[in-house]
Length: 161
Image (cartoon, rainbow, N blue to C red; front, side):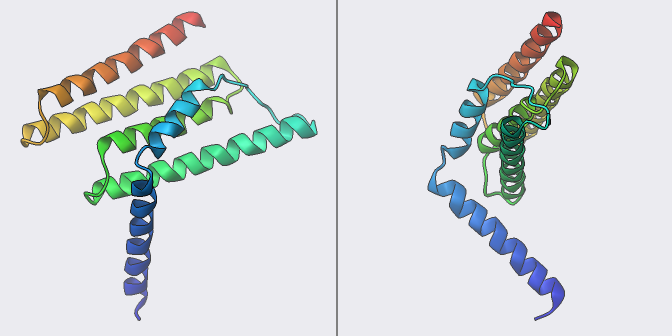
């Protein structure tokens, strides 16, 4: 088997496995984002203290896993197998997981700016789908409301600094 064929086959297997995994529990991404939203920032630094170092290691591992899930869903979405909602939930969970790794308020604000960027992209994506007859006005209004909510949240965080 040629190398390009092996690479294509490996990519197809990864997409298929991701698809099966996420279809098995379609609410998995929602569970992740809800769990991430209920966490309060812990600002864990590497301190030399074994407990803090272990916590930071676990937080990093969680962030890496959530990033991978969001990337997998994005690939599925580009191949017509995922949904915008799954991607939104997984990407937001990954971004929120990064807040626990921040050491300053300004770093946390940067993550909230990334969340606003995500919702702007999702709104634009929804607009393009709407223009092509996929999705109705309600979908567009929901995307806009979500973007506005993320912008309001960012401004509140900035005012609290």
